[in-house]
Amino acid sequence: MKRREFCGAGLAALAGSALPYTRLFAATAAEVPAIGLDGRQLLLKPADVEDLRKRLRGALLAAGAEGYDSARLLWNRAFDRKPALIARCDGAADVIEAVRFARAQNLLTAVRGGGHSFSGQSVCDGGLVIDLSRMSGIRIDPLAKSARVEPGVRLAALDQEAQSFGLVVPLGTVSDTGAAGLTLGGGFGRLTRKYGLACDHLIAADVITADGRFVRASMTENPDLLWALRGGGGNFGVVTSFQYRLRAVGPAVFGGSLVYPFAQARAVLAGYADFIATAPDELGVAAYLVPTPDQQRVVMLDVCYCGPVADGERVIAPLRKLGKPIDDKLGPTTYVQLQRSGDANNPPGRYYIKSGYVTHLSQPLLSPIVEALESPSLGNVAVIFAPVGGAISRVKPDATAFWHREPNDEVIMVGFWEDPAGAEPTIQSVRGVWKRVEPLTAGYYTNHGGFDESERRIRENYGGNYARLAALKKRYDPANLFRLNANIKPA
Image (tube, rainbow, N blue to C red; front, side, top):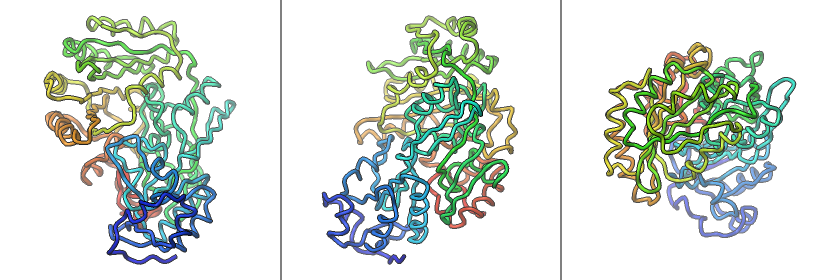
């Protein structure tokens, strides 16, 4: 395959055509403007693009093709990126062809699973998007308590399928999230204090490496690669199949939400911090400081107790005594319903996020956050305190690529806006509050970063595992084809 450097027409040269892709290139015989890995503009030859299209079982989309705009749309609408090509893969063979094409053309390349990434890096301007969203197969083996999951699967489908057998993978808190990206970045959820991270349950994976090879990663085959996939992100290849170990949970659990007025925030958070520090591993409680539709704020506790349902009332009783709640929806429910309970509050929209780990929720951390949120000028900014610790901390930091095993809590700040003009003031508001508390944090969750993280911060985030990860990156992706992530540069 050949490509030549491009210095003339813009990337949107074909955007005006309404023809589907299969007719688009046949009719125009036009070269396709694109961006290379080195940032230079290129022209992809029509014959090369057509050859890729014929090799794919799925669709290959360019600007103007039917389905192109919906395929490039992300959950985080803060990003409106326009790739040169989108390869909508129907299986591992399609992924191999797409990776080989990207490598041969030296193309900027993004990999999209569920498309839920806060950082928007699952789509790129001017490059190739390897779209895995149509690869959505799930196979549960209830006897072996394992699951094989394709990379386009979202939590809602996996939760429902596994719960048919009373089993779960400890994955996430919003059911629209893609399982693939969540797992590769670590994977927190309502059950992680009891069972550990999603990546701790990854026991094998099928991977297409940067040179287009199919590789199996397990404890007996390429174990170093499996180690890297468990928290090292999408740096090492495209995962086309995840094999998880399952846990017996549900279908019934105890949980729901408990809401306090924001006027009680200081007392509620102080009591919450003391309570969660000694709570049993079976109990996960996240505290949300969120604006309401009527421009007020509330403190919401999101509760999941995966122990015996009959014990739920007794275990959570101290939470009801933190103040005078204005809404109480705690009680027996199903795990699937609980996993979907936050979906309405996490719709597609425009978001900006900062996060970091802390050893405990101290007053020097809580006070400036509450003080900032008391100002009506802060607008649409939410703060979440998510408990970690428990089973997560009982895994050695070097046992997987995921390094931060010691923290007990994660602090997350999210700004959101509807009008594009609201981007800059909202981002500056989040940064202003974050600047006051960042010195109290150490490291961050890669799935809650990626907007403006420095190389230094990324290195620090992988801690003592970075050197080993960089060596593995050199082995599996020496040209750094897979760079749109919390990027580990080849050693």
